[in-house]
Structure formats: structure tokens, C-alpha cells
Length: 168
Image (cartoon, rainbow, N blue to C red):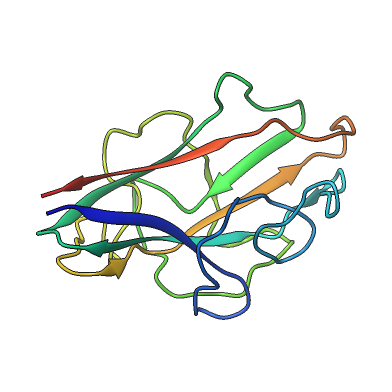
């Protein structure tokens, strides 16, 4: 028994718009966007990105969802910051969709982890202890970039997002 995993993205309603080819952040609310076409202006925020993990196939249980960013050695540029809804403390669950915004997103309030958090930081059904026993989704993972007014012009470095989970 092996689960199949994919990220899915929601852009205008809670209904997922499908499996994205990238999770680029930009100045529009769209999936698979080109950052050169929709750059984030210094001193502003990207539109928040609302994604979920989706598991299908034959498995007994999916649990212990851990989300973080791997910079692949490139890291942040000066003036760049990523926030996310992932947290191991006081998890309120992000299972209710809200239309993405390009102002401070009330869900993406935690600093993006840059290493495996070591414990669940994304829930299922509003709980970090939640699990899936059949095809289903994680809670929403909300990601948003903040670019300070002092940030240098040009593209930011590529980041890789990881969602680790236990499959039983």
C-alpha cells in the first residue's frame, strides 16, 4: 500500500484549482505564475498562496505533517521574508478557505521554518494530531512573501518547499 501525494492550490474559491507546476508568489492571485510578469513591488506583500497536501491511493494512515522551506543553499535576499500558517504552538487550524490577499494575511503569521520542524506543524481537520485514513487533504498551508522597501531590485532566489509526513 502506497499513498500518492501532490500539492493542490486554491485561488478564488475553496475548490482546488489543481496541481500547480510551481508555487511562485507574485503580485496577482494566480497559480503557475511567472514572477517576471507579476513581480512583487518593494515595500509590499505578495498575494498569499493557499495550498494543501492531497493524498490518494491505498494507505492505512497519513499523519505528522511537517512543512518547511529548503533554500537549496541560496537563501533569502536582503529585505525578503516568507511567512506561513505552519506552527507547532497554539495551532488553530487553517481548514477554512479565505480569498488570498496582497495585504498582511491573518493566517500567514509565522516565520517560514528553514529546517525540518521535528513535529507536526500542519494539521488535518483543524488539528496537528489529525490524520487521514482515506483519500483527503491537509489543512491549508498559507504562504506569503513580504518585501521590504529597502530590498534590492531583481528576482529572489528559488526556494523548495517540503511536506514530510508519516505513512502507516
